[in-house]
Image (cartoon, rainbow, N blue to C red; front, side, top):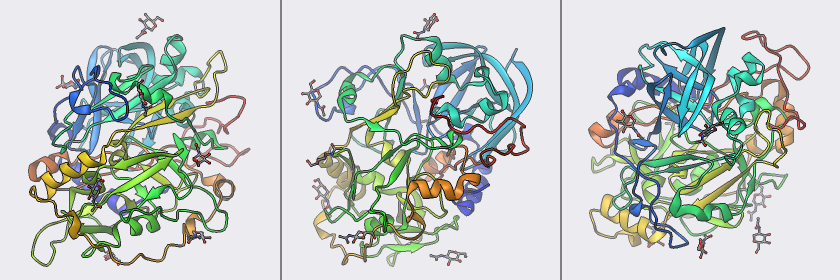
Length: 508
Ligand SMILES: *[C@@H]1O[C@H](CO)[C@@H](O)[C@H](O)[C@H]1NC(C)=O
Ligand SMILES: *[C@@H]1O[C@H](CO)[C@@H](O)[C@H](O)[C@H]1NC(C)=O
Ligand SMILES: *[C@@H]1O[C@H](CO)[C@@H](O)[C@H](O)[C@H]1NC(C)=O
Ligand SMILES: *[C@@H]1O[C@H](CO)[C@@H](O)[C@H](O)[C@H]1NC(C)=O
Ligand SMILES: *[C@@H]1O[C@H](CO)[C@@H](O)[C@H](O)[C@H]1NC(C)=O
Ligand SMILES: *[C@@H]1O[C@H](CO)[C@@H](O)[C@H](O)[C@H]1NC(C)=O
Ligand SMILES: *[C@@H]1O[C@H](CO)[C@@H](O)[C@H](O)[C@H]1NC(C)=O
């Protein structure tokens, strides 16, 4: 088992213990069917309708789901592929098997049962799920719905037949006229102008953003081991514009490779390389790379009034990041010289090696891009070949509006952005060290240990804290990890199911 940031994980787990999900405050609501499509950037403020997602303090996004008619509020997680709910589901049938998933933060373990699940207007009979008993870290009525590729499902691996497929595979197979894509729109809790909480759709787009279907299609980078498949795509060469307005050198040493990005709606803070985090935050006067109270993984901390403009570029489409997302008040750094609290750089340096991708773009990124994930042939048992899976992103943040929001919220209404004088650039020699591998090298080197799962949901919930103090802790999730057996060898002992390599002929 490997964790991306074990220390933070532990810290957050403690917080989780103290502040169960049930206590977290829910920020209100959201909307679909806005009916305001003026092309280009649609304004989210105009969205009206019934929201599908609840945003808990920008830390996690949840949706309602029912099992045998019983309601659960589950985290929406593109980084994992299994459904679990906490508590007992009336009338659920026991498969006699036990399932478990380890997330970036937290884990679940319990009997694998089946029930009739209603999700986003779809009804699926005999859907498998893990029934997690309530305990100090699992609040009754909570759970996670994994929206990742079915190949990464732990339950599917244990059940070892299409009966064990994740809910989206079941829906796409059952409702054949429903296009096999999902879309996710995440709102920003502290945004003064756009207040909708978020939306999740299956097979349809949110109405003001229909344009997303004409955005460039980013091919999902396919892993040679299907257990390790995630929703990943390539960032453009040097595809990040830093606060100085210049593109960073994100070229991988020696190979000249582009970076592979994983999109994870269950991961609060994006994980980038140390180099990229340095280029974003390291040139701000007063920025310190330090341990943050309560957490042991060092992070960049800086004055909360620091407005940093960062843009990610995918297929020549620029996705500006709202400055409220770049420097977050969700975690508190040590006080500065004047005793004022500091904020934290949300794009954190990855602390541990990960295989198969270089960057995890979680909620702080996804609030800035409406995302469509087309599953293509990644649907178990699909009768017809429909093509390769791809991802589309539609930019949501208008830099001017982001600027005025930031001035209002963090600068007390007085535009001091001209006072920011970045320090000279740090040496930027592209991506070094651990990232200095081609994906193939990485896969080969780590094949026996490749992560099977996903980065799952980890959310943690410090929403309570956040709400209580308006600046509190963070959470992030961790990827679940399990160690599949090397190709051709019996799989590890936990479940006895054969380890299936990703097979191009069985796309999913
Ligand atoms: C969105 O659609 C409108 C009208 O259909 C079009 O004018 C506009 O260029 C589109 N924008 C993008 C980013 O595709
Ligand atoms: C989910 O259900 C809870 C409890 O009924 C409700 O308060 C909440 O608004 C619902 N969330 C969404 C997104 O519909
Ligand atoms: C899905 O398909 C079933 C029948 O297979 C149908 O009853 C149901 O209305 C469909 N649901 C949606 C949301 O299309
Ligand atoms: C960017 O980084 C790569 C890899 O380290 C290096 O080969 C290249 O010279 C760098 N480019 C610039 C313009 O510094
Ligand atoms: C953070 O704390 C750890 C453990 O106390 C220490 O080893 C490390 O040097 C600290 N890092 C920074 C950047 O202060
Ligand atoms: C991006 O733009 C460049 C220059 O116009 C072009 O050569 C390249 O093919 C474009 N890339 C994509 C993915 O559209
Ligand atoms: C960030 O971008 C906005 C919009 O382009 C601009 O008004 C603002 O001055 C920029 N801020 C900084 C610190 O670069």
